[in-house]
Image 1 (cartoon, rainbow, N blue to C red):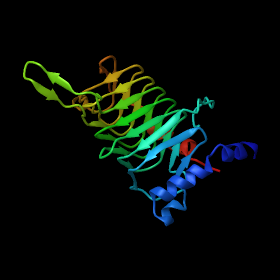
Image 2 (spheres, one colour; image 1 turned 135 degrees about the vertical axis):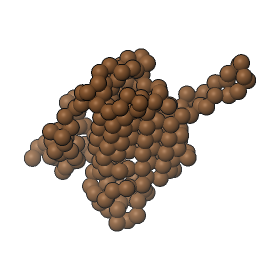
Image 3 (cartoon, one colour; image 1 turned 45 degrees about the horizontal axis):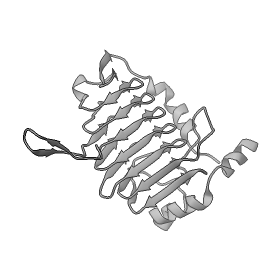
Image 4 (cartoon, rainbow, N blue to C red; image 1 turned 30 degrees about the vertical axis):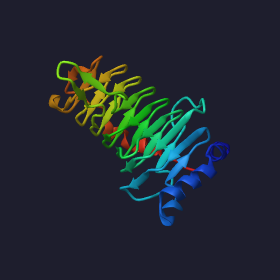
Length: 239
């Protein structure tokens, strides 16, 4: 009972009500599919959130304390000026940061979780499949922030490039995913890795790792099927 009360009080109900009724029609908003925890700030919301799944309480958690460690720095924040497309339950952990630029699209799948201090910066197009977990301190960005120029041809290089993460992926802590990165389904990424190209030619059931990432091992997979029920229950927001 005490834990349930603590959880109830950890939610910023004013901001939760505000974002839901700004993002959705009354029927969907009244179910409170978005939960904002205390210490997390919605800095800007001039974009759009689309639910491609049935609206229900706690579908998306911002600043959700789902990890082993519960203390936070109260520095989590989101700017949503583009399109956030939700296809299932999504959890942004403690002190995570989200930035979606105007006209950019971020597509998230079912059971996407982003651990403490992970940053997602979307200037163009980022797509993440179902059952994808990110360890703490990861960076996912589809932009270089500044234009680069090839002096030999006097041409400007693309500043923003698509990212596509397959389903059943686990991204190890402190990994960086840059534009052009594409992973297959059933892919594990080792800690402290840099993904910056298309790895789908390696096929499924692989481990990637290194800077930049390369194929580390084949014919290996996380046993998602044995974890699914517990994982979904663990990441579900309950009062």
